[in-house]
Image (cartoon, rainbow over all chains, first blue to last red; front, side, top):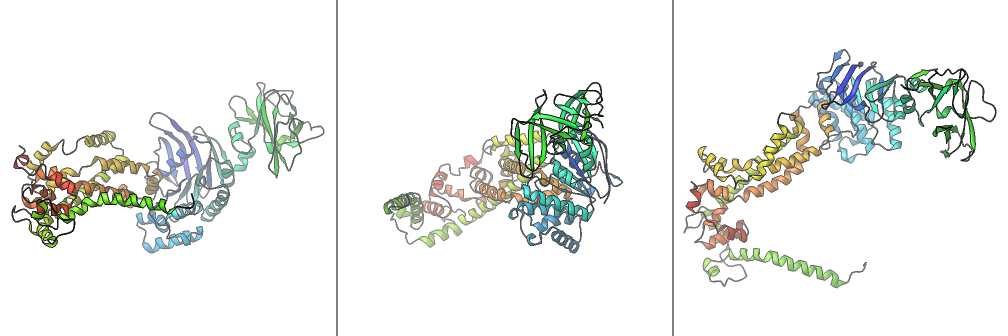
Length: 358
Length: 273
């Protein structure tokens, strides 16, 4: 178990495409770090650079105290779980797990012991003699995990390992990966594009966009204080409502908005953010420091436990989303007033998208 | 549609039987011919049932050679063919799988150039380059040897291309997983790529074995001693029809044997220079 440090790491492909632009990440020993971002943001490239499957163009990657830039994947003491599992199709489950150990010259009794132990933890003991093609998706996933844990590496690397599973199995495996990582306490770096997976698994969450780190931190800190409009709209589902506002008298000003007293908008205007789940239906007057929004309902999605209400705000034509608990009896076409309390408001710079308050 | 008339199940069988008869009858006639003495065959009134000379004809052709022409026995020739076909098939597979491995999995200078050079040799079969090839083999003193017989035929662009196509369908993640598992390039080749290629290798072996077995022109050129002869030596037996028919019945199809009787093994052909 050792820390992973990325120091101004860059990746430029032949042809000049810069996939990763100077990334600094520090994963403490034993922590579970999740890299999340839209496709093409460089998260997989970054993971593959840690694994040694891509060369590092600039900067330094350290595992523990060792600089690993020039080391072969096998010398980095890492184990990786691939998106499509990459099990050797002609080898039995046992051999798949034992292969890496055999190549390292581990004594036979020890290999046997470690493989059996891993199989017991992952509950795949009955399948040890089977070939991967005779296993279900979830079982293959476990074998891939098993192949990683028998090695007892310094670092686990996961490259979207759950994306080939169906929704139900994905949730189950997500919980198991988390438990396993807790139990083994091995430093892990996990890549995903699913923000829910990212939120639930991470100790350290890294949100990436266009080859750069947008924000690093604990998942809930990022949820509560997103550093930019990109993070605000990427983390959380449905995404945060972002409304352009002008500066009023010590409050934001936009068509359809009321209240918000005390939220200082700079003279040039700003972007006001409020999460759909923080909007509540109000019937009477909105408190001065809360933000009130009135809009005509254009669509209602009832999913049982909650109801999503959509409608255009002001003259912008932009839809606002409110996530209301239970069944909200709203008909399309009727106006609705919702409000969010002051602590749930976010203010971002209009040009850079960076957070400016509160 | 569900109920089938007996006529409709009977008719296809009749058609199939006729087909089998058309295909199998010449083979049967060739076999019958190999059991009669030459006189019966040449007078054009050979019966359609096996004659009394089966054992005698076959032992003579396979193990003794025919006395009249003092040729080598066909058994020896078939053994030579077997050795040659096996060497060519195994050699071709070994060489081409390694070159495909190099082309697909290594980034070396002029990699694509090397690939295209291999590709271009598809347009240069032995027949086209037969004189320079013969000259090289002769200068190396490899005439009348298994080495001279097989080595020039071993290089194979077809097999290299086939393995290249197959390797390109192997997921990259397997290479990466092997790297992380600490396998060297040759370990990856031996432990992962080779087992995955088994079906391709088997299919290719069959094709290349037949290619080697059916070689006609090259062995004709490269061998001068009768002991190095192959079943195409069958073609030489102008004067001995019985042996020809027997060999055809025993070793090959009659069409091929008839075809082989065409060019013969003339000294003029062999003395190419």
